[in-house]
Image 1 (cartoon, helix red, strand yellow):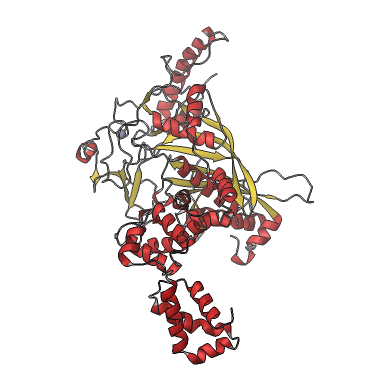
Image 2 (cartoon, helix red, strand yellow; image 1 turned 180 degrees about the vertical axis):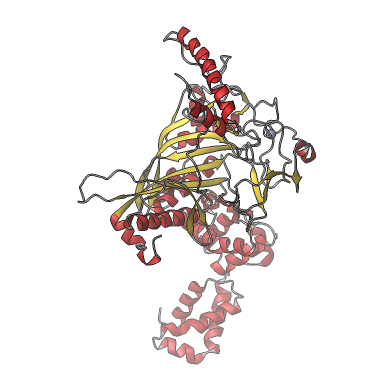
Length: 98
Length: 503
Ligand SMILES: [Zn+2]
């Protein structure tokens, strides 16, 4: 099943990646080859092998409901590009025309 | 645009169209720590002081599921008559919005923990069964303040400020079937769900603080052409988000019904969209106009192992389920003789638990109901505290009620006893002793006071003797005054009438 250039363009948009037309021309066929290679793995799997999402066969890995120390506000904000009033300051979310 | 004059009234809309309503309710679980990390969940802390690498989505941090959140979700599922599935996974919901620092929210997608349940809702004596499609777990998002626009709205804001204290608090989302057919049932469903979660003790369900919030999906379809004709297919629905009071649920749904009916009557189409309810204006408005079909690209969360609960685990949780609000109503209407309205009033006044404890402590259900609903709820409201924080215990109230029943206190004296208890003068018996509040049953003193009253008002006495029984009031008052209120007015009246020969 081939992935189309339009599908790659849509994925790029969903992932907030600004790809130029040239980049799409270049990357879409490459992504198609990668998907084709991965799909071959599925050919090996017999009908009795269920699809798996995790590499280790674990279930029910839980922790007790106990409070642990947090970061200080200063540490929490230390990596933020901008802060204001103890909060993370982020650019406007909606464009003015929205 | 539809002009206002074309708006059908709500009743006109209902005559033509049948509303189809489904509800999605988010409940913040009352765990001590967050869903996937050990940060506390307490409301109201300084911004970004209840955060850690996991809930800030810092590189390399790994989430681990809070066992209590799983248990609470199973409790909700079982209380809603759901099947608890033997295999369930978390999923990543990918989106870019600053309220989730990871750029995805851990949620559940096609493998929710609980499925196929129901909740019965009573409205005006009729029971409506609302199907529950699913109950799933997810993490709450951070809180954004929008700056620079009008009244904190996101539209027109120059920038936003984010606090991640709420990010990662465990949430359950409870999704109904499109079974609800009226705004009243929608409201009653949310109320019943709130009472259920409260009874389970899994959330403080405070809508005003956002620990329970509701999205309402509303569509209309034409009623069948004939009463027993085939039902029409569902219409296009809108989703009104984040309704944060019971009243808003009812008002927003009602508004959407009228709005959609007016559009359909004008030959227009309903646009499938997200809408917001403006509490002040009482209207809903469309969300982002350019909103595109959302593609969250869900996939199984690789950092969390699947949840495969054993039958033993589920049955152990079932064994801990407390009485449900519905079971409690059945018990209280049966054992206590209360009406559903009585129960709703007691619940509304926040005294239902106290009333039960008072009955357990020996009062009759009727006395317990009266004292808490009338006298004590009023005093709590005067003091601006919840009734449970009054300095009078259910045992105190039961004692007072018992003394009234035994004729040792009048209602007026009992109120004075309550005054004393509330003033910290000790229990009812100590207050009675210290203030000398017992009904005087010393017949000699009563006799003397009655004789004195009759002698002091011969004209009135004569009227009563002549058959005007209603005229005895001032004499009763005089005796009560002489006895400093510590006599039973009914008994005094009977005694006076007997002495005047008209009993
Ligand atoms: Zn954390």
